[in-house]
Image (cartoon, rainbow, N blue to C red):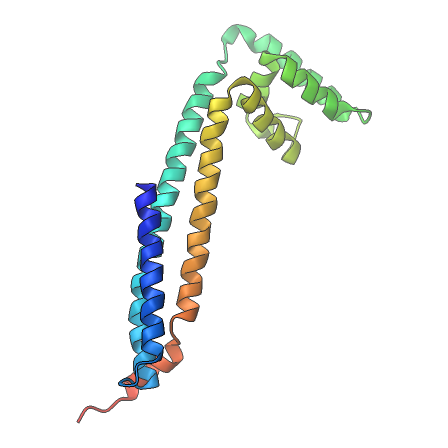
Length: 193
């Protein structure tokens, strides 16, 4: 499905560019007529690119959902571990305040203790004393170490989103370069005889 979508987007772009090249040397059309026809080609090409982008985003969402579901199952939270999680939160608060290697201590302890890894992976970011980029990287490391297959799902989701973004950018460039709406609007002044 993804391969077919990418192929369809590439084909639409290639065919659209070829039509625009042909239109630019079409001596039977005036400049406004060429731009009006270019607008039609542009719209068809952009539609195909946006469809490719939609499919890529849908696949990214599917990978993300699969990763989220696997993550829920991968780090089980048990009621009897509540006291331990509270202790880990105290440890995190203490180490965040520690200016002498606290974040390194957190990383080392997290990689060595599955129960701390569960706290890092499962607890909402707002409730953790560890914040920002460090928390995001630490969560990635936890997933990679304890459940690498889940990391692959998130990585693929990111790759699909990145690729979808390129199609969005490509569609914007097509709109800018395939025709000039200003020249095409001159066709509205045409008088039929």
